[in-house]
Image 1 (tube, helix red, strand yellow):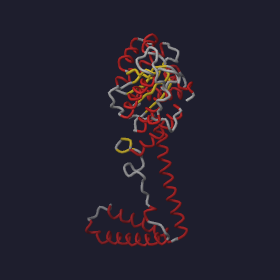
Image 2 (tube, rainbow, N blue to C red):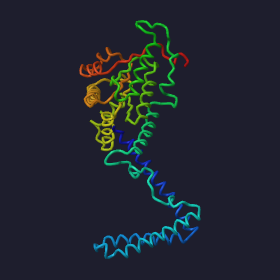
Image 3 (cartoon, helix red, strand yellow):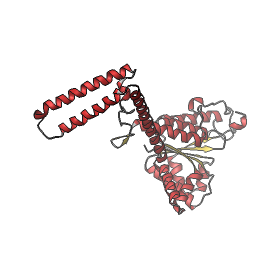
Image 4 (tube, rainbow, N blue to C red):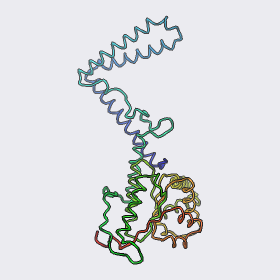
Length: 334
């Protein structure tokens, strides 16, 4: 899985701050104990001296038999110093372990990486940072989940031109979305097209999916079509080096994240560049077997009228369309 570089940076900074805070608390405790019992400072200095002396003896290259007595004497001295130190610390109400520099994560030593792979401690922070971004971009709320979804806001009466009532249709839509999120990325339907008018729950369900998939540790990127196309345009035409780096980072995250949620397809001005950008994103993600959700007010037929045959064939053939219809639930006073 590939978290956004910005998410990894923020998570890594949090991990570093945790380490610095822990070391700061240890150093403050140590200085406080030194002031209360000056003998501790002397003992710590002597203990460090025995360690240096022992290292020098072991690195001398002489046969251990020849220096066995010296090594044993240094070790005995070190042990006596350690014992005295522990006695003083406990007399001050402090356990010796409180002054040990023990990393919070034993797997990676608080570096965030083990053998070139992201450690679970850093991954947990990445998930938290990612959720912050998704919450801000998608206006997610704490109660926004599949368990809190209400079906009574949809009419149970027949809807013109449709076989099922809006409520029955939404039950089917939710069933697919819930399966997609909770079985991600192994759900049989790999890509979803959420199509229908405004105020019918497309964004809400996208948010439910984003929350579920993100909390399970996968990278999720949400973007409006307009902002996505803007990044591709900037990448191509800007002469500003910093803007270009940011645009390239943005376009890479669109292509590499585990789940891309692309919102409001059809709201953009459709020109050659927009068509090329949409094709690059959709086709690249399909070839890499990465999951995509597209939300739009357009039907598949309208998509075919607006976009190139190459785009239409990929969306129409490799995305499962979930149709939303009925009365705008916001107008029902809910």
